[in-house]
Image 1 (cartoon, rainbow, N blue to C red):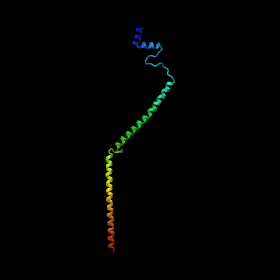
Image 2: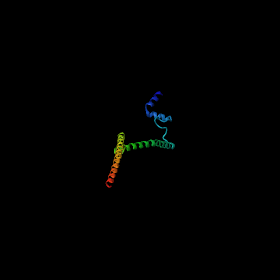
Image 3: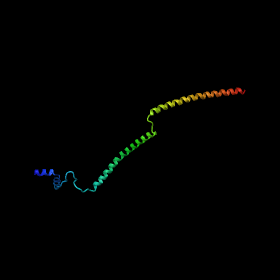
Image 4: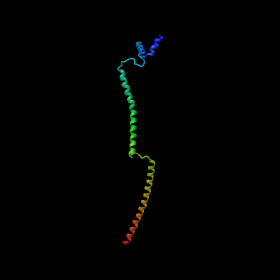
Amino acid sequence: MRAHRSLIHRHGDLQAAAIARAGRSPPGTTAGTRVSRKSPAADVANLTARNGRLSAPLTRLERRLSEALGQTAREASGLGAPADIETLTRRTTELEQQILGRRGELAERDEDLGAARAANRELMAQLNR
């Protein structure tokens, strides 16, 4: 009996035949070839649910990729925000100070012009007397 078992174990085709005679499925095979109607329906339901679960992350990844590509395109075209905001802020502050200084100069010149006009009116009045 022991020799018989070792012979069957050494030869895969004999082992499969012996197992089939015993009414069991050989290792690595399915029990039967018939598929019930519920099995494909369950597979479709599982795949539909999986597609639904994968849809949201895919949409998020597509949006992030689109934003990254858009940012790269804006920077390449010069339309995006400049890389050195600090330099621009410093330059803006300098220009604002220049504007304030020019407004002060303009106010002084307006006063000088007003005084010159008043002196001119007074001289014209003296000439006309």
